[in-house]
Amino acid sequence: MIKEKNIVVYNVITSNKVGGAELLVNNLSISLNNYGIKSYTIYGKLFHKINSSKNQISLNLKNLRSIKFIFRLRKILKRHKDEKKVQILHLHLTWPLIYGLIASYGLNYKIIYTEHNTFNKRRKILLGRFFDYFLYRNCQKIICISKNTKNALLKWQLNLIDREKIDVIHNGARQYKFRSRNYSQNKGLNLISIGSLTFQKGFDLSINSIPLISDQVDSYIILGEGEMRLKLENLIQKQNLSTKVKLVGFQENIQPYLDQANLAIVPSRWEGFSLATIEMISAGLPLLINKNYGGPKEVLSCKSVFSKDLSTSIKIADSIRTIKANLIKNNISFSEARSLSKRFSLDNFSKNYSDIYKSIK
Image (cartoon, rainbow, N blue to C red):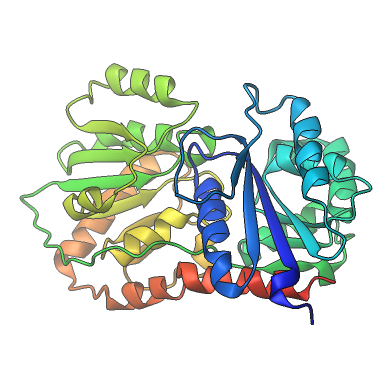
């Protein structure tokens, strides 16, 4: 077994702007010191300093897909190279994986990749399968954030990847203050969603559902940023929902928004795990998730989590209407969900990763 003090981990990701993967990488890097592992986080671009650690390194890229990523990363890896230590390059998301493998060629870094999703655009084309196989076969370990993510990966790769190199580590999420909520036929719901504003997250579908149940919903708050902001803003205007639906952007402190809500929605078209699901149930919120996307449904098995077909706006509206009636009629206990959320603590998440790092030879 390698002594912890001889292990150095370099987590590489595009940026720290938004998203669950970015937040996880930051939390992981900070916590590894508690397990005797020195760590650095290398960002293609650092939009803001999110902790006081000196171990954050920015490649200062204007274009996060620029091939300058390779040369600047390789320069850092060569400068930090130390034959006396086990040095692990932990790559996250597509471009860091591609560029990280090239940049580390011949430098004897141990490569780990975390698969954060059940789907990507390359899985639409046949050549993407061969391209991914080449990438995966050059990794010593592949970490999947859920069993569903692992199964999707194996199916995509026709089970050609060595299963021994694949492990499942569920994401770790922050815990929030729990509060009980009351439901009445005379009061509308206050809905909340959390996630990046991308096609994957399905917020266009959930926004379009609101006019269908306007008498059932008082407000709908969406926390997050992303490339679809303008499109979603135009959709809100088109549907005359500006007084009811709000895009409040990325929020570091989400507790006040959780306190005001009484039903959480995750309308994602596909999902690897979704940190937001754990965060929202920890606060005592009933949760509506899409049964078709996998991810968290494998772990979120309790009475306050409703798994429905959310593939269309009409189905989302029908599900919200049904859930409201259920919440009014039945006295649902949320203690089970609260206990479940604690299984996915940041401490457990970091401990599981530290064990993987220590197993690398």
